[in-house]
Length: 191
Image (cartoon, rainbow, N blue to C red; front, side):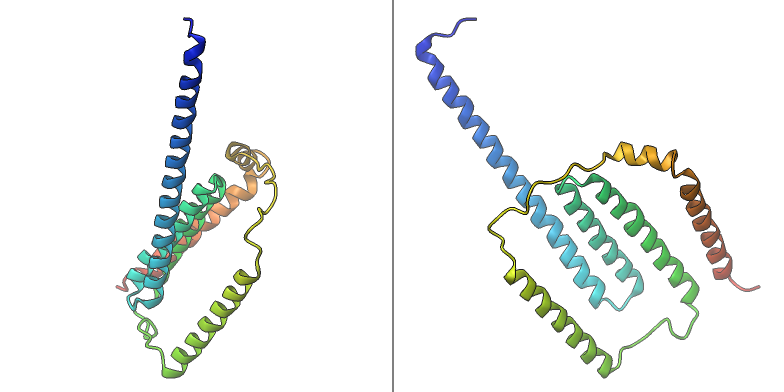
């Protein structure tokens, strides 16, 4: 197919406009996804901090960890996102659920903070917020952080886990299974 010389320029301009439009649309979607994951993370973190019910706290913690995993996916750090979901969202929440199962009969299960504890926690939170704001205000946000180094692919890490590091990987899974069985045994009702 032959294109006339006079028509080459408008077609090239149209293709360029379409390319820029798609790039802007992709950037808008990434920005929207970032704000969504950040809002989920922050909202869930506040909910976890303010909730007095341990189950609601665990659900809010799941939202926080899931939001952080979403941020990792946006950064193309798929391995970190998967580890975040598996280890923290999966493992930590299971630990909390087993902790609730084991301590639900304990007199310490329903703790109410004293006035001194509330004052101390507000002081520590204000101190941490001040430090974070100070560090963020001193950072030079105008220049990029530098060239990213190539990271290993998820398939390479998986291959290493199932070849070179198979014994420690399986030992950790057996240990977790034993802990889970022991926690279920200890949480069973007395006869």
